[in-house]
Length: 100
Image 1 (tube, one colour):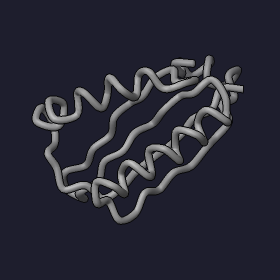
Image 2 (tube, helix red, strand yellow; image 1 turned 60 degrees about the horizontal axis):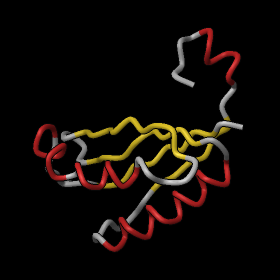
Image 3 (cartoon, helix red, strand yellow; image 1 turned 90 degrees about the horizontal axis):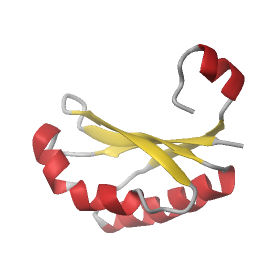
Image 4 (tube, helix red, strand yellow; image 1 turned 60 degrees about the vertical axis):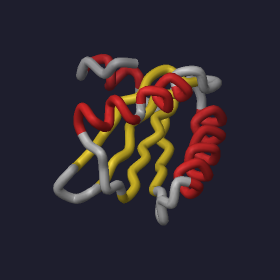
């Protein structure tokens, strides 16, 4: 079953175009993760947070990526990583134009 992974963490920047440039290589790496389908990158300059909403083919791929990504972020000095895993209801998502 397709699975959503929601991740957020404290982030001091860069944001916007600077973030896009700084994180391009990471984005390319994420695109090659097993079971990965897509990611929407999120950022909030006012609250100093960043993260993303991911879609994976299945829960095991999402959980494996969350474990890997959490370790990577902690290696970058991020003190806390929040991750939640949700199963996708494809029928209702289709009604509301969800990209699943």
